[in-house]
Image 1 (cartoon, helix red, strand yellow):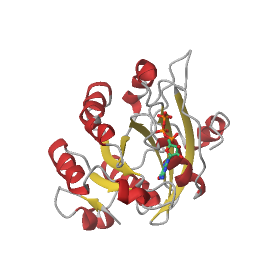
Image 2 (spheres, protein in one colour; image 1 turned 120 degrees about the horizontal axis):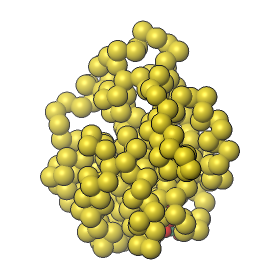
Image 3 (cartoon, helix red, strand yellow; image 1 turned 30 degrees about the horizontal axis):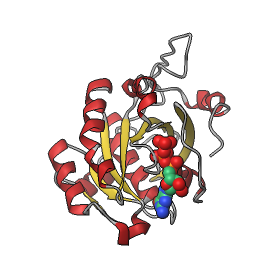
Image 4 (cartoon, helix red, strand yellow; image 1 turned 90 degrees about the vertical axis):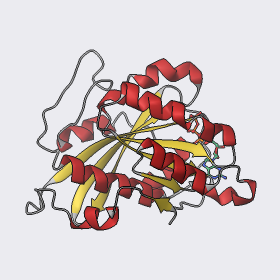
Length: 232
Ligand SMILES: Nc1nc2c(ncn2[C@@H]2O[C@H](COP(=O)(O)OP(=O)(O)OP(=O)(O)O)[C@@H](O)[C@H]2O)c(=O)[nH]1
């Protein structure tokens, strides 16, 4: 698995740290993750690979889609509500309005296209500007199955991660389902450590667009939200 992490011994910290809720086996977690990055870097495919373990060629995202997928982390059920944003410039205003309630951001680039890596500072700045103050973000270099066409060294991503305070840099392949589960698991573990149990958190719905503005929902609400999930 390719990743790097800068702040000390993160692995033992994540595995060993109590969340304050570990005694409660029934405790579940719900985290909202926003997926960002230039168009065609493979955001939708990575999310689809995470959810189904399969690769499917998918059309460009229009605006924002969302999906929910559960993971088991050390016996705890963690629901990841993943918001897939369109990378195209013309959707920027819409997608930015989704940042503020995200617990985590996955910022992706295509490692075969340098320009998508060069855009990362812009995406990171946007997360800092429009997202919550303590949002966790990771850098995802997708399409690592295309290594011969690589235009971005993994070391460059690690340097950027270190400079910008990212949780980690990882390289994934949605096509070969490489490192995809690991990327989400890394994010989930960090969010568990930082946020503790969110299942009891207050619901925040701001009509008229309840999908646009909320932070965390009790688990039973996810089922109704799921109906609006994309098919991928
Ligand atoms: N070789 C390879 N191709 C990939 C991979 N992931 C995605 N692709 C291809 O990259 C193209 C873009 O994938 P998408 O998932 O639609 O990209 P996106 O970032 O969601 O694009 P927008 O919705 O426009 O923001 C598609 O043709 C995919 O087949 C991968 O891991 N390896």
